[in-house]
Image 1 (cartoon, rainbow, N blue to C red):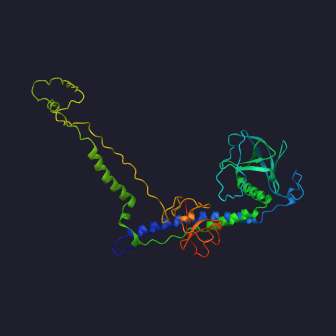
Image 2: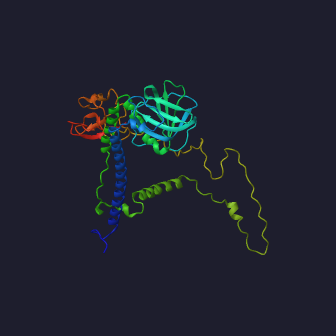
Length: 390
């Protein structure tokens, strides 16, 4: 026997079942994506903490290592590329990308492949052992580094070489190579702790975005619009059509009624006399401005009705944030890691605000802090309430 509510209907139970299924499916998809990114961040954090090489790894390589030099990574299928038009690359940065972009196995325009061979990554340099010779990129002489976001190419500039060059790798090895190159460069300049701290901050920031399990919808929450296929959207579209169609009919020109001379020549009387041939009606050409019979005349030109309405100015979006000239709000957008110098003139900044090293958050007591993403975020202020966006 079908379940019914107090009114004896079953559509409320069907609506609640569909809503709960949709919410659970959306939650499962979001939770799986969150878990994948969390596992990747923790894997990189573990790898960064235990990142080290050995001199024995380079024993079988045709490369003579310097005293104290160890091998981190090798790849036999690397290609050497050179830039035809040399440009200035950005300085190397100690940033980790936990969400690598989707790369296509192609060579960008402006690059030419000059050699291929074995790529070796050590704690002092990146080396390509090709068929035409050896190409070195020493970390101490590196002035520019750029990873192509759409192709598996990494370009490097060094002081002792005028032309920019780099490596073209298989797409499956790009993410591992770029991370290990960042760690090797950080080790060379003694900044591994900065990379580890960045990964800890990303893990803490990601933990705050874990999706919550949705609440259960009951049949009593169903609205009568749910009985219509499409729900409230169908009702809204039908209401809009009911308002627009009469307005369009009102503004359109009325149908032209045939003239009396044409109506009188419709069908001849059925007598024994044969019907005469129809004569084409004479076309009368009126002079411009001459009124037609039955047409009203106006003193001036007929005004034209404008069918377009000027857009209304959009209201300022703050979502509860105080009025400020920086565009900071609580609605959403991008996190703020380098706030404006006069932010404390408009927001209530927590004590020691400028000593923080995270992104902007509002604590539960209303104070603004730069500890977002940190384990001790809003410590002493009842915890984090929400993020400040720009």
